[in-house]
Length: 92
Image (tube, rainbow, N blue to C red; front, side, top):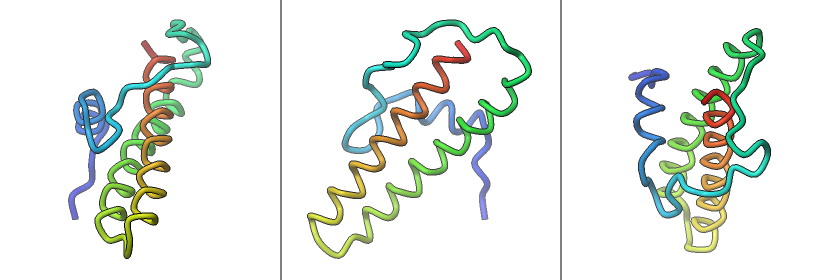
C-alpha cells in the first residue's frame, strides 16, 4: 500500500481538488509566520494527517449509498481542506 508522504500531500493539497477545492479563509491567524520551532514537527504531522483525511473522505464519498450521504461526506472533506490550509499557513 502506498503511503502518502509530506511532499505528496503538500503538492496535492495546494491545488484545486474535489468538489470544494482547497481554497477558503484562513480565519485564525491571517497567515502569521509561526515562530515556535518546538511545535513545527507536530504541525507537520498534522498537515500530513489532514492530507490523508482529505483523500479518505474523497474515497468514502465515492462509496456513499445516496446523494445526501455523499454531500455530508464532502462537507466533512471540505473541513479537512480548511484545516490543512490553516496548518500550512501557520508554517508559512
